[in-house]
Image (cartoon, rainbow, N blue to C red; front, side, top):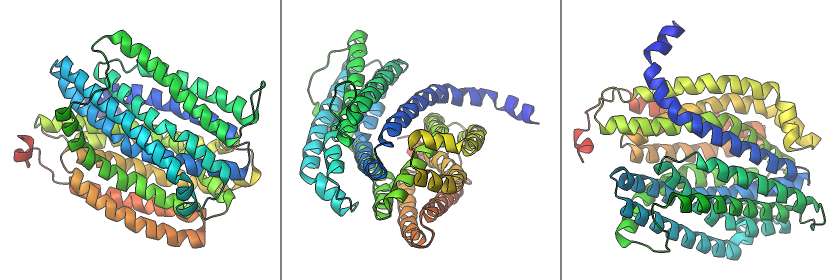
Length: 444
C-alpha cells in the first residue's frame, strides 16, 4: 500500500524534494554553526547565557521584520529575470540593496539610543554586558539584509549553491572569533559577551565578502547605490502587508513570550533558550517543506491547475516522515545534545524535563506552517493575518496564566494550544476550496 501511494505521487514528491533538499542542506549548516556559537556562550555562566539569548532573539526578530523587504525584491526581481529584463533586474537589486543599507544604518543608530531602555523595560534585563552585546550585534541587522539581497539574487540566477560557500565562511570566522575573544585565547583580550557579538559581526562580514566576489564574477550588471522610484514603490507595496503579518506572527508574539520568560529565574530563561535551539533541529524540515509548498502551490494556483491544494497534504506527509524520526532521535540523545550547548547542571535538568513535551507539541507547528503557506499562496494572506493575530493574542494570555502555575511547562502547553487552534482554522478554511472559485482573482 505504501509503495502504491509513493508511486502514485512520485512526480509530485520529486517536485517538492527538488526544492527541499538544497534548503535542508543550508539550514543544517546554519544550525550547526549556531550550536557551536551557543556552546561557547553557554560556558560563560547562566546569567550571561540567558542575557545573550534575550538580546540575540530581539535582534533576530527585528531583522526578520525589516528583512521582508528583501523577500519583496525576490518576487519582483524574479519577474524581471524570468522575462529576461536584466537591466530592470539590476535596478531592482540596486534599489533593494541601497534601501537595505540605509535601513540597517538607521536601525543601528536607533538601537544605540534606545537599546538599554528596551532591555530594561521590555525584558526587565538591567545587565550592562547584555547592553554592550546588543549595541555591537545590532550591526548585524543591516549586514543580514545585505546577505538576504545576495541570497535572492543568487537564487534568481540559479546559483543558490554559491550561498553555501558564503555561509561556511561566516560560520568558521564567527566560531573562531567567538572562541578567542570570549575567553581571551592566543593573546586576544577576553571580552566575554561582547566578544561573541564581535564574532558575529566578523562572520557576517566574511559572508558578505564571499558574496561580493561571486556577484562580481557573475557580471550581469554593476552595482551602484541608487534607488529607482518606480521599483521602490513596487517593493514597498509588497513589503507592508508582508511585514505586518511577520510583525504580528513572529515579532510581537515572540517578544511577548520573551517578555514573560525574562521575568522568570535566569535558570528558566537559559533553559528556554536551549530548548528553542534544539527545537530548531525539528524546525528545519518544517521550514523547508512549508516554503516549497508555498512556491509550488502558488504556481499551480496561478495556472488555474485543478487540485492545487494537494501539495499541502503531500508536503505534510513528507514533513512527518522526516520530523517524527528526527524528534525521536533528539529525545533519545537529549543529554549529549544539551551538554554541547551548556554544562550547567540545573539547566540540563530543566531542559530534560520539558524537552519531550516541547518536541511532541512542535509537530503541530509543522502542520500549521504548511497549511498557512498554502493559504498565503492562494490569495488568502489577509484572512491568515487576522485569524493568526487573534489566536496569538489569546495564546499570550493563556501562556501568561499557565506559566504562573506550571512554569516552563506552561509555556509549551500554551504553544501547543496555539498550534492546534491555528491548524484547525487553516484546515477548515482549505476545505471545499475549488480551483476556479476565485476566477476574478486569478485573472488579475
